[in-house]
Length: 218
Image (tube, rainbow, N blue to C red):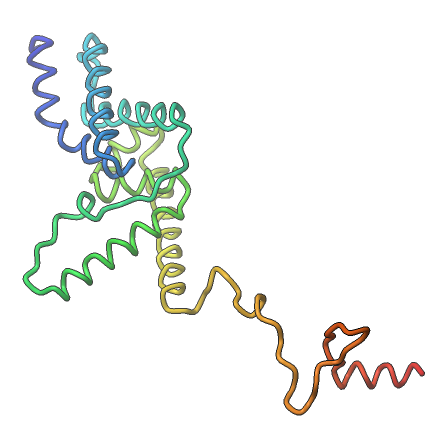
């Protein structure tokens, strides 16, 4: 077994960059991501005595990082933040064509809006699996469950993400609207009819069906 300092340095070189990326993707804040990196590896160093029993080092480190992230969220009592991949989740886009750059940014906005709408558990699992590229075995070790259970959770999370993407597209296409304009505008009187008034106050003119009903009751 290598000495503890060499062991720690090897882990840091192998996983520090991806833990930093995880922080950026999870918090959308570079400073918070750097705090996550520092605290995660501080815990790794404090638990160096366990190194002989660790079978999946990458999954072990991610498990520590998840705990640190949870503590950060509880400590700051923040609202769930908008997930962003504009510069970090996707590889930087540097197209020559400005139209291509605009389309790429629109796609990033579409995905982060859909991710934002998911539950924390689904969003975290998708980030770890899709963007951080952890294997089923690594995820099973992190979540302390069987790989088959991870497959089921991933299938459900991807289904919810697909539905969220459809909802984002529907809003952008004008098929859905978060506000109902018709509920805020008064209904216009039919052509040829004047609004009824009583005691100087404007009243809605009765519909033909209402008038017929009133006439029957007389």
